[in-house]
Length: 88
Image (cartoon, rainbow, N blue to C red; front, side, top):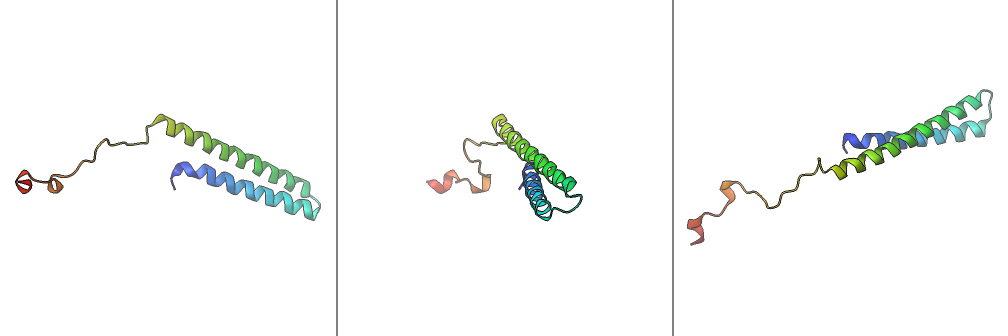
């Protein structure tokens, strides 16, 4: 897990909490539940925004190639290389 995964995680958590709030307050139908349902809906929207943002930011980073390191051939330390005397 890296720091670029945090918006996706937080977005998912906010969506789940928002859906739970909307479901619970819709089912209870108590006084003042309309504001709680709106708050739950807002959490879902903010969570969806964070989740979408994390997807676009993640893809943008992969395309730039700045975070990838590609070695064309392995580099061995001198101690692991075969010495010419041992081959003969």
